[in-house]
Length: 309
Image: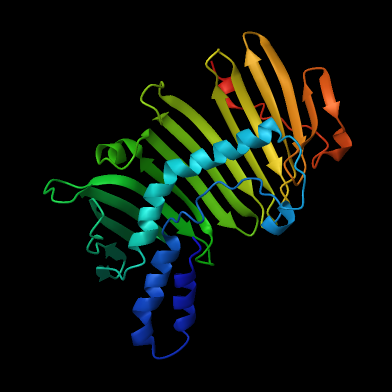
C-alpha cells in the first residue's frame, strides 16, 4: 500500500553501506504492505475546485448522487478508525524486528484509552498482519480488531490483499458504535484500485436489524469511479444501484427497485456541479439524456440482494 515513508526509505537505501541500510529497506517493505486509510477507502464523485464552485449556480442535486456520497462516506466511516489506528502506530519505529517480522507497540498517547499492538509477519512473499487492542490498565488478553494479508507485486506499493475488521471486538472496547464484521478484498495496480466489501451482521444503530450486504468499488488512475451497492428499505423494497462518475464529478447512477414481482428501473445523471441533468423512473423521463456523462444505462442486475432468495 502506498505510503510516503516507505518510498523515502527505499530511496535512502541507495546511499551508504548495505549493512546500515538493510533494516531500513526491510522496514519499508513491511510498511508498504500494511493497510492504510488513505488507500483502503471508497472515493466518490467530487466537484469543481472551491474557487470555481463559488461562481456556479448549482441546480437541484441529483438524488442518486447524494445517495452515492452518503454511502461512500458511511463505508469509510465504518473502517476508518481501525485503519487510522494502523496509520498512527506505524509512524513510530518498530518495537521489535526480526528477519521476517515486525512488531509496533509504542507507548500510547496520554489521552488514548487503548493499548495497541500491530504485528506483521512475512512468509512466501506475503505479509500477514493483525491489530490487537485492549483497554489501558486491563491486564487481560488483547482483542484482534483488524487482521489480514497483503501480497505485493514486484513493485512493493502495489498488490492484492484481504483484511477483516471485527467491529464487535471494537465495540466491546468502546471504540465503535457499529457491530458486525467487515471483510475487504483489495488490490492496487496499474489499472487502479479495486475494493470488494462484505458486511456480515452489520449495524450502526442498535435499533436496526443486522444487515448482510456487499459493495464493490473501482477507481481508475484517471479518477473515474464505479460503486455498486444494494440495500432493503423499511417498506420491503430491494434497491440495487450502480453509480459511475468521471474525474470532474459528472456521473450517472442506475438503480433497480424490486418489490414483490415488480422491478422498476430508475436512472439519474448529474453534471460537474452535481445538478441533475436527466432522470428516468420507469417510463417517465425528464431532462436531456445526451447531457449524461454516460449515455447508456448499466444496472447492478447481479446484486445478491436481487438474485438471492
